[in-house]
Length: 105
Image: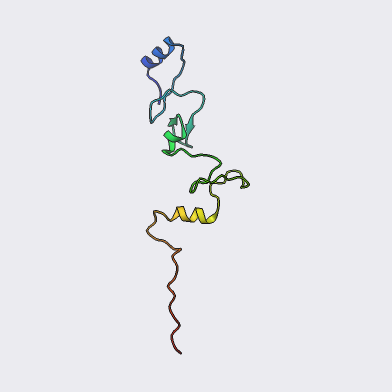
């Protein structure tokens, strides 16, 4: 959000020349801004923009280091990815089928 003229003059008195603040928390923005495509909002951090602070280089599910994985990998394995994907899901397609004996011919 843009700073008002009054806020900008107060900042200028202290030697801070800024004209934008974070849309969520109101912190004055510096060189770094977090934005979204086709939206006018600007945020001070990933935490303000997404509501979650992500740690790069670690698995999203179990926090294991992703050494040896491709750049940008978020999961350590398919098992970890599926385990976390169905955690809050009502429909769980990976449930085991009951073992029922064969019927006599």
